[in-house]
Length: 315
Image 1 (cartoon, rainbow, N blue to C red):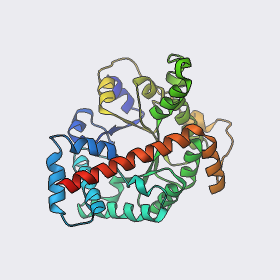
Image 2 (cartoon, one colour):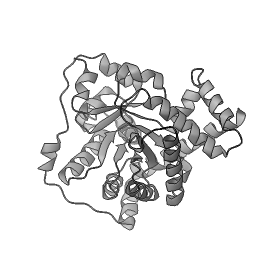
Image 3 (cartoon, rainbow, N blue to C red):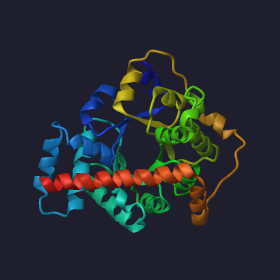
Image 4 (spheres, rainbow, N blue to C red):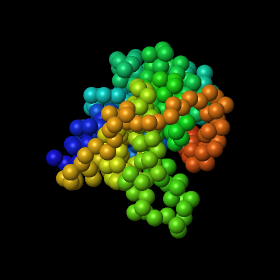
């Protein structure tokens, strides 16, 4: 048994890609997309016709509507190849506007429903700002499930749990990137590998907290840089993994055992934690890594959403 098949025995494997032609090879249950992945895909020869067809079909509609229709087109094609859910992201430029996020999310879901897709097969991705989490709470109450992304801080995870969101995506690799950059020449790669990786430690803390206090929100580790990070989080509810790393897992026959244990977490002596808005904002402000990476992530996704609109205009 290869490591990919072994991992699937105790963790739901999710493909982190906009290239749905890669899905059959790895047979993930779910798939996540984001504006950067979609932008990359439509600039290639395989998916350029999909962009062209979507824009021509809906020419004359508002630019943001055409962009959402393009995302949904990708999502529908992906859902035809997997048995689970696809995550589709709300425009990152709305990350600090609760009502606009709710409105945009509802439109995306309506577009999926118009294509015959059941609401339970779609997760709406929203940046884990205070406003984004409040939007997610509203959407969950309306039966629309959410995936809170760009999650770097324990405080973000706590508030997502309070809001009873369906799923969170803590970013392992980007957390590690920040600490590596801060340490500079003093960074010891071997000493910060596996369970000692700062990103792995962050997800482990969140996972144990959720299991200890019976929080139903799913934890999906994301943004992996290497196999060591993935192996150290084996047993997590879900892991979303890029095709290159999926291929490496499939090529390895080394034994793989769960590193996280929900039953063990339920017996841990952990403090209960709760945040109101002021407490959340202060905790996030105190976490320089999370503050910087959240802002950086929103800017990057917003820029790619704008580039996608430029491509739409050019058709």
